[in-house]
Length: 313
Image 1 (cartoon, rainbow, N blue to C red):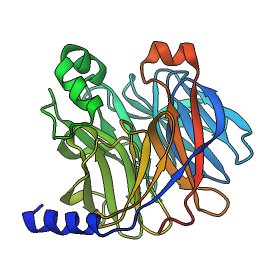
Image 2: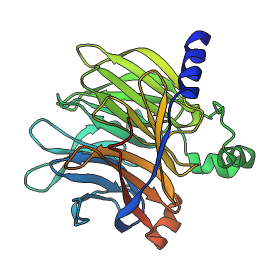
Image 3: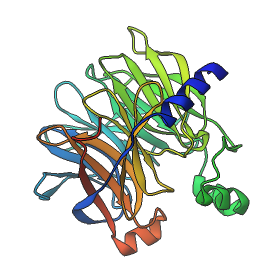
Image 4: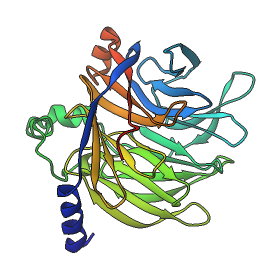
């Protein structure tokens, strides 16, 4: 990105009217909610440490869809309706068959040394999945100065021990590397109308925005500095990107071009987000009191929170 583009986006942020609202709980009692997707009238998400895919309606009625072997990450659907879900530590994408049996859809265990992370499946059934590249918990434990800077909100592009890649997985399960040099790839969405792929780079404090070729290959990478460390992301019906800010316990609405127009706050760490609901104007947030696996399983304090974003332009 050029200095001129950065200056323009800075002026846009300064001149933008900010709308702030507060989320309220919808569904509780989980270890760590993640990767929310609005699908067929319900919010689908994963309980990462209990290794489950769950769906909840807007009345708060929850259903466990499937138990997943291994730690569970992103999810999406093939055009025929079959569910795809990331088994992070197995480094595989699994597919839920009509029989209720999970089978291997794509196996990346031979190339991914750590964990797979979030995933987005586009309308053609092509999946985009990222890898972590390194263990962030271990890195924080070994680098107390980095951890202190993170929690203090001192934002910079961090010098991570390894970069991560983004993989493009075709509907038949074949895959290829679509992008690399990512500073901890995390939340992923595809804007079908704009034919763009958006990736949150958590320790890069930015979004990477790619154009997509006809075969789904990412190209023309544009960097959007955020001024905070992003985690999950989601699109709203007006083409803006909601980005979670876990350090400040909120989600922020970022328009194309970088202007921030709204925030939704929570009382817990805000990890993932999706826009949906019957009116398409509800922001669903995955929130947790802790991201440490053992503590999360002991407390079961993770939730799905919601807020109306109808008035946030």
